[in-house]
Each structure stands twice: as C-alpha cells, then as structure tokens.
Amino acid sequence: SPGNALDIVGDDLKVELPSGEHVRFAHLDYAASAPCARAAADAVQDLLPRYGSVHRGTGVRSSASTIAYELARDVVAEFAGARPGDTVIFTRNTTDALNLLARALPPGTTTVQFDGEHHANLLPWPNPLRLPTPSSPAEAVASLQRALETLTGPAVFTVTGAGNVTGEVWPVRELADVAHAYGVRVIVDAAQLAPHGPARLDDLGADWIAFSGHKLYAPFGAGVLAGRADWLDAADPYLAGGGASAAVGDRPGDLTWATGAARHEGGTPNLLGAVALAAVCEALMGAGPAVHQHEQVLLARLREGLAGVPGAVEVSVFGPDHPRVGIVSLALPGRDPAVVARRLGREHGVGVRAGQFCAHPLVRRLTGADQAGACGDGTTGLLRISFGLGSAAEDVDRAVEGLRRILGT
Ligand code: PMP
Image (cartoon, rainbow, N blue to C red; front, side):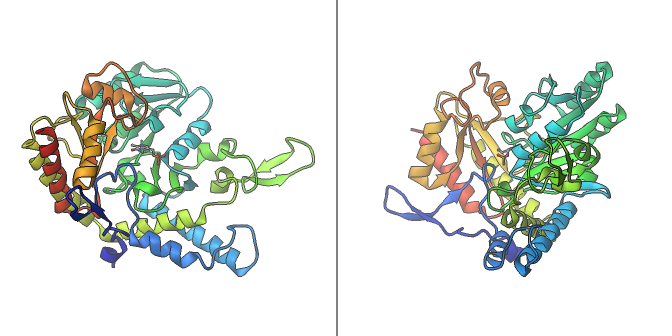
C-alpha cells in the first residue's frame, strides 16, 4: 500500500540528550536531503542480487536491468507530467540537470531569472538577466512581463517551483503563461516542489523540469531533467563518451552522437538510483494529496508554536499568508543561527540547518545583511526547519520547545 511504501526507513533512530534521556531523533532537515522511503529501499534491495549493466550486455542481468531502467524512465515521465515528445534524462541531481540544460540552450540565448534562486538555478545559465526578487506573485508576473517586453533575441525563463529558503510556492503557471506569450520557454527547478506535491510539466505549463532523488525519499546520485526534446537532441552531449555516441569512426570528429535521452547520459547509468527514484515517484502518485495534507497540518502546528517564541522571526518573500511547502526559515536577531542549531541538536535531539542555504542573494535580502558568507556558513543567515513524510507532531513540538528554551537564555 502507498502508506507502507512511503514509510521512512530508520525513522526510529534514537539520540541521547544531556539528561541521559533517549529520544527519537527529530529530523527536520528534509529540504537538504530527505530520509529514504521504504519504496526506494525495497527497490534497491530487490535489484542488488540481480543487476547488470544497462544497455550493454546480452545476459539476463543486463537485459533485466535495461528493462528496469527504461521502466523507471516511464514512471518518472508520468510523475513529471511529461507530454508526448518530451524526454526524461536521468542525471545526478538537480544541479546536474540544470547544468545539462544550460549547455543545450541555443547560442545567444538570454536566461531571465529572479535573483533569489538557489545557486543551482542561478549560476549555470548563460547570459543571465537577473530581476530583483519580487514581493508578491503579481509583482513577479509584472516584472517578468516588463523584462520580456524590452528584451530582444532568444530567451528562456527559469524559476523555482518552491523556494528552498522559505518554502513558498511560486506562481509558475502564471509566469509560464507570460513567458510563452513572448515565445520564451520555461524551466522549473522543482527540487523542493516535487517532494511536497505535484510537480508536473503539463500542469505547470513548463517546458522543462528538474528535481533530485535525494530530496524525494530516494538515495543520493539520481536526479531528473524532463521536458522538450528538440534542443536537447540538437545539442552536443553533456558527457562525451560511451552511451552518448552511436557510431565512432577512425578519425577524430568522425562520429555520430546518439539520439534521445542516451545522448546526455554518457557512461554507465545509475540504475539503482533511477529505479529507487521511480519507486518513490510511483508511491507518491499512489498516495495523492495525503502527503501534502500531512505536511500542511504540521506546518500550521509549527507556525502556531513559533509565533509564541520570542526572538524567532519567520521570513517570507510573498508574505505570511502565501502557500508554502514544509519549510520555515527563521531570523534570530542577535543570535548566531549556527550555535542555536547546534544546541537544538545536542540538547533537544532536533536536526535543522543554519546558514544561507546556497541562496546567498535571497538570504541577504531577507536578513538585511550586506555580506554573503560561504554556502552553509551558519554565522550569518537563518535557521531552517523543514519536514516531510516521516515527520510527526512530536518533532515539531520539540523544535518549538527547544527554540523557546534556547532563545530564552
Ligand atoms: N534547487 C533547489 C530549490 C534546492 O533546494 C536544491 C538543493 N538544496 C537544489 C536546487 C540543488 O539540488 P541538488 O543539490 O540535489 O543538486
């Protein structure tokens, strides 16, 4: 059943508090990497005794593995709302997927983006045109429209589906409609959207979507780029080598690159990663809105609790009432978020993250800071609480109580 398939493996991990008490570890850092779902663990366990190299051999291991890999692609295509003609490429993660696509853009393309993106969606793009992060969805739409009105030459627009700092859901559909009205294609960084609700090309009206297995309850090392095939088929392979090449002659340059997904999946594919990722996609599709509802209940409980904690100020881009996934970041005026985060771990058995979450421009804006620290440097920035499938009311309550005590001393 979807319930069991989406149980979290190792959810009973216990930690010892300074009092000697043993408590369940409250993992509230799902936005960095989510723990593994039963569906993914079972899929890996099932394949371990049987796998072979995908697309490369004639034996039963290799052919079964090839079938498993291509079935995984089909499941991911369904999860990602792929339309006829769309392609699904397995990558290492979202960063890899976005870099791959960035290299496939036709020469001279401008990339329009807001400056609050995660670095993975800020830095790979050629010729960026950065718009200031808007303070409302309407302003986002208007700002994009203004930019596209004056822009000449080919362009794409890239945007996050849900922000990794505030969890806020971006008005992707509205932005995509504006972009398309100007003939501009749309890329969605769904790293934080996919784990929490539908992240579909068709519903979002996006041309491409990217996400990571390790934020989607699957192991590390597998990600997805899904969307339009034409530019990808026309581009040089992302990784030149075996798999990406269909025919190689004797002279350098005398070669024919592969077509389809294989063109950008050079080297031996990550079968276990792809199959595990697809297993979770299938389980999430089976679970439907239950996942989102579970998170929204916890989100309301967390925010209600935090409202009563002096010294913890929730940050947002679009305002407190805007819909968000299970992510809340706090400014802690006068406190070092890294120290507070460490104390939450040691004294309360709660794992969170402090720092700038690879979104330096946005965190600077949200905190009013004028200096960016290193990515993940907790001495400047925010404290982030994020959760998902395996999170419980008790985790959220412990985080709130822990913060109350730490900030009260
Ligand atoms: N985009 C967003 C919104 C993210 O939260 C992250 C991960 N923090 C990424 C992209 C990059 O994902 P990965 O590290 O898996 O490539």
